[in-house]
Amino acid sequence: MTGRENTGNEKIAALARFLAESRETVIFTGAGISTESGLSDFRSPGGIWDRFDPDELSYPRFISSQESRRNYWKFYREYWKEALGVEPNRAHLAVAKLEKLVNLSAVVTQNIDGLHQKAGNSPEKVFELHGNMWEVRCLSCNDLYPWEDILKLLEEGKEVHNCRLCGGLLKPTTVSFGQSLPEGALREAQRLSGRCDLLLCIGSSLVVYPAAYLPEQAKRGGAKLVILNREPTPLDRIADLVIHGEAGDVLSRVVEAVETKSY
Image (cartoon, rainbow, N blue to C red; front, side, top):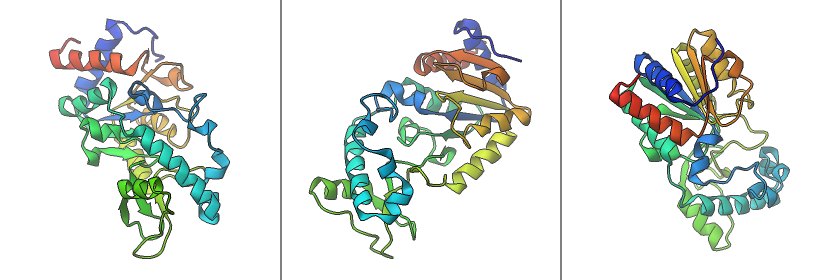
């Protein structure tokens, strides 16, 4: 069944009903859910990629070149400072509220901003396919370092030191070009998507694989597929419901409908 493309009350009610009746829901989010929070999209004109060469920030360069690591940390100094004041928006808050209202088993996200946890979703239910910008770990022994300490070093013009335990390189857990997705998060996301009976995609263009494979996997397993995005996606054709609109507005109305059983 191909989803109708209106954003009226009928579609809001349909999504609310799907959520209320679902035994196991997975929510899958992309960059579009964080747009209202004001965090720059890397791909937008005037964004941070206009000031840094993406090739220079790739994982192979980071591993092999001290100069590339210096450039990488310059990039992260800017990105952290830009993101410090960013707060969850209505869409994040709605997803957090849905965890309390319906049978939500997981929030799988392509985002690195940590805003789902900040909004109130249980950390153990959030699976970050591209890592988290607020976590710095050793690439060798996985020891965790406070990002605040690293930013302080950068602000003081100092070099980022190696791991104090094993001497390995430190790096934010975000996935760089040429770096594999975190196996644990991806494996669990695939498992949960394969067994859910409702998968709700929010703010993703659904073109980046392997993450975009999850909706197809859920659909093959018999789940309903709902896509909420500002623009059409390649998977609209297989969705049970398609809503083109702003995530914050739509999800706020959906939460209200679930709470009042207006579906």
